[in-house]
Length: 307
Length: 73
Image (cartoon, rainbow over all chains, first blue to last red; front, top):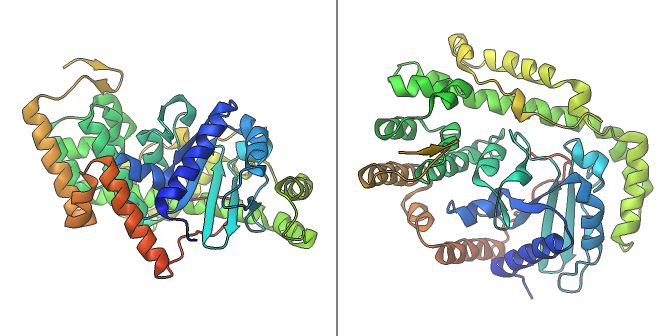
C-alpha cells in the first residue's frame, strides 16, 4: 500500500513528538515547514534540525522507528554518521525507510546552513521558525528564493521586522517600502534596503548581486564539503555492509570510517573568511562591480563549531 | 506603534491591507494564481492541496528524493 502525503507528514511529526519526549531538541524545517507556513511546496522528504548533543538519543530513537514494518537505514555512501562531532561541523546525515511503496526520507542537520542565530532558540510548534527557514532557503538553487521572500513577507505582515532581511523580489520590496519602512538597524545589516527606501536606480543591479553572492557562498561551501568527503566515501564503499544489518551496526561502521577519513568541520579548516572572499571574487565576475560595495556582511551566517 | 526588538504589536488596518495586497500580488506573480490562492487558504486546505499534488505526482512516477551528499544546500 502506498503511503500518502498526510500519512508521511503524521509519521514525521510523530518522530518529532517522540524525540522531544526523550529530551531531544529538534524541529522540522525546509519544504514541510513552508507548507505549514503557507507557501505551498511539493516535497515528501523531511529535513530535521537536531541539536548536535542530542544526536546519540536521536540515533537510538531512529533505530527503533518502524514505518510499515521497515526500519531506517543510512542513505548513500556520502552520508556522515549521526554523531555530535560531525553534526556540529555542518555535515548532514541522510536516512531512508525503504518500504515498498512507502519510502520516507529524513535528512538531519545539527547546524542550520546560513542561520545567523541558534535555530533552537526560536521554534514554531513542530517547526523551525520562519526566520531560520528563510535563511536556509538562500541556496544556490534558483527555485528556493521565492520561498525565502514569501516567508519574509509573512514576517513583515506579522510585525517581525527581520522579514526585511528576506525580501529578494524587487517589485515586492518596492511595494512594501511604499507602505512601511525597515528599521535603520536592519538597513545597516542589509545595505540594499537603503536603496529600496530611497528609490535608488541601482536597486535592481545590487539586489541581483546580493542573490548571486549567496549563490556563490553556497557553491563554495558545498565544494569544500564535497572535497572533504572523498576519502570517507571510498572507505564506506569498501566497508560493504550487507543491506539487512541494523542501523546501529551501520552507524558504528560509519563512525569508524569517519574517525579515519572525515574531518569534523571542513568549513572551519578552510576558513570562513576565505570562503567569503572566494564568493566575493566569483561574484565580481558576474555582476556590476559597483554593486559589490552594497553586499551584506555575512560572517554571522557561518558560525560552525571549530572543535 | 510600539516595537519590541524587531517585533511590533500590529499594523494599522490601512497599512495591513496594503501589505496584504502587495504580498498577494507577489504570490500571483511568482507562484501563479492557483498556488497563490492555495497559499492564502487555511492550513488544513493547504495541506490537503499539497498532499493531493504530491500523491498525484508519485502515482505518475515523479521522484522527489534528493541526492544524499552528506551536506545540504
